[in-house]
Amino acid sequence: MRILWPILIFALYAINNQSIAETYKFVGTTFTHILEKDSSGRNKGIGVELATKIMSNLGHDIEIQIYPWKRAQRMVKNGQADVLIGPYKTQKREEFFDFNTYHFYQDYMIFYSRVNETFTWNGELSALRKFNIGLMAGWVYGDKFDNYKSQLSTVTLYSFKSCFGMLLKKRIDLCALNQRNAQQYLSTNKERNKFKKIATPISSTKGFYGFSKQKDLQDLRRKFDQELKRLIDNKEVYKMNHRYGLTYESGITNKEN
Image (cartoon, rainbow, N blue to C red; front, top):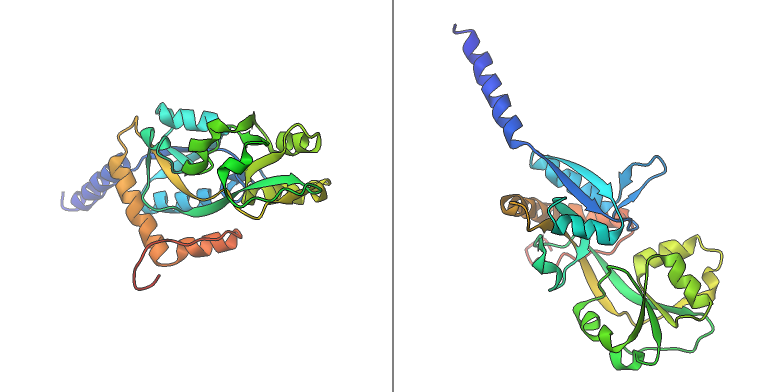
């Protein structure tokens, strides 16, 4: 009987751990260096690497799936998925998503125009009223621009190909995109020399993980935050961003940062 006690204790420990460990569903869309497929069809990007590391450290598994952006957001809103990978934080989105405290990447939202246009911009939104602007479906461009865009002439588009194609056909005057994705797209586009980036950015935005408010994930988000902060403090998040060619400033003040 004495021999069986260690076995029984180990079995109870294993059962207890198994009941605690869970698999959570993370979803997002294809964003360069954040979430995308490699040549073998496997998920890659800092959003994948970081979420996998954090959840593994917390003793959980994750399932990551890629969908169109609006569908991915809707799934998390409705509780069909647990966490949205990489959304920018806005007041409107905070109604549906419980954002983690610390961002894990940052972007600049910028305009592109035809290369032969003389358009320059100083950041004044009222100066955009005479232009027709292509915006990506489901994207946010910072609260200031998003609150003003109803006063602008805009066209909702669903791909970079459509946005740059309409620019060439002069059906729109400007494409509003994030610099990271736009540079990646144009690097493989044979007509890339026909476009130019407008120097003044629309906004500087930061990407987070958005937890579903339809599910009981408050404790998970709190533990996720603690682990993410530890990885920020020890420079691991900075190093990850650097490996993907991204710029990262934590915004957390401590002795090391």
